[in-house]
Length: 227
Image 1: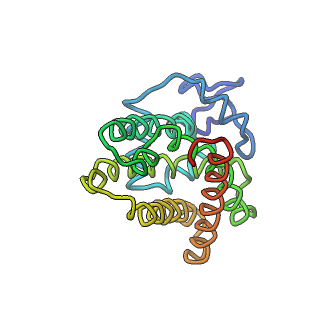
Image 2 (image 1 turned 90 degrees about the horizontal axis):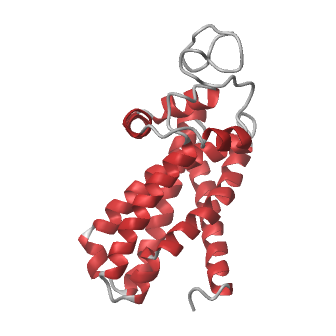
């Protein structure tokens, strides 16, 4: 058989050239989480994946989903690294502000909690749009890569001087902006693969993001995190 990653002909369960495990059919959650335990390669894997997700996301998504996994950084690892940077920057900004609203927006628990709640819910909505071509796990993977890029955008937004002078009155506007931008990036990534009606699917993604955000707000209030 030929390796889906490097096209090397080999026998067995692992390619003797690149080391990728034999993959069959569509991607599954088990496969994504198992590959998460592979070694980190920031220079080759992370930065290559980051670069291509910015300039040519279709190549990364199409090749990863089709079986070329060893070339690209695992989507869970990619998301967690960008989220960790985001959380670090957010915690620094939180410690340098007196505004309760800004503290909440940049609190690491708030940032991580949003993503934990968001990913499965928004992936369900994008799966409904992609289900003829991709399963839920594949939609989940696409969104992990998209949200990794969104994490980097949130870092630049957090570092903007506007964040330091923002008052309580601006929180709703910023929250709305932080729904529009992720919905746009997620829709764009799915659009690059499927070429569907962008406007319709954007509003579906936005609705999914809004529902997940409301659910997140409900959870933190019930848990007494913010009153």
